[in-house]
Figure 1 (cartoon, rainbow, N blue to C red):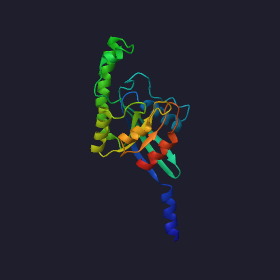
Figure 2: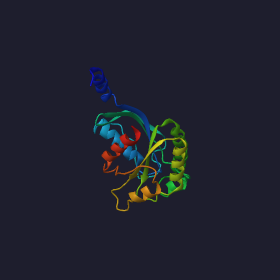
Figure 3: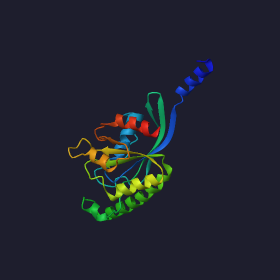
Figure 4: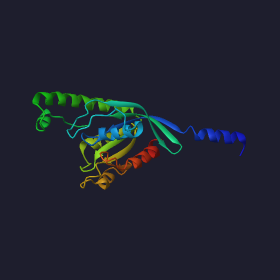
Length: 210
């Protein structure tokens, strides 16, 4: 091999870098913000004060949240990305559902209005992302109007997609059912809460998005 080829081969080895904007999408309470916090903690360190709000109450995230200049590494590959955590996508948001869960009526109405605006904002942000992690609760039936509509929008916009089947630590989780419903997309089972399956997800991100 000539010195010239050796030099350019050596140079290209160290410049295998990708930049993209990656969005976390999915229905409410699927674990998007929890997963986002795992990314942040693993990349920025345990001492990072940056943390997204996560709750068992639906629509805790009601506006798009963004973290820039994150970096994932896999062997010789490096990926600089902006992480977008979005409000849960829902076809109907009723303030009475919040009241039933203990939220005051006045606060519930405000929360429902903000959540509705958050859904609209999430859909608009689809034009700004390069790739999407669709986070689904693996204990629920994946064949829903929200999931089918979301997938349809992503296909129409030619977005790269990985489906993250979250909450695999629960006994009722069924990753195989998600694979059957969405056979055309890669599916990775994780537990964001227990940080299980995250390395496999990282590998799949490089495989599909790099």
